[in-house]
Length: 75
Image 1 (cartoon, rainbow, N blue to C red):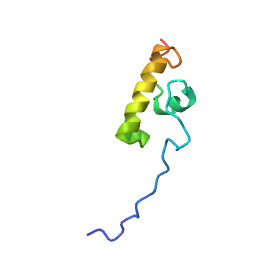
Image 2 (image 1 turned 30 degrees about the vertical axis):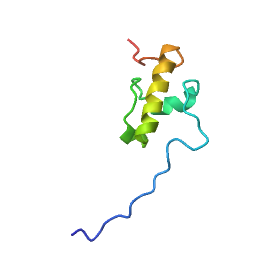
Image 3 (image 1 turned 60 degrees about the vertical axis):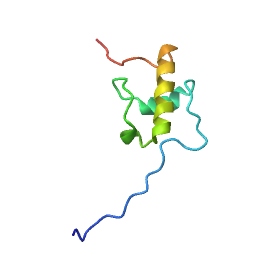
């Protein structure tokens, strides 16, 4: 067995209890979108499945209403 096991690290949640996941909250949604404009995975975002679904639908709604870009490619 491995003698030098690290204790499990407690990570702070990426969405605080007072933050509302909404398509109008663009500053919150930008944290879950990559530089290319892709929605990051729940493993990288440290979200639960329910939170990831809420973020994904909010990002898609914000894109349709032109609050967020579909892509950040500058060609």
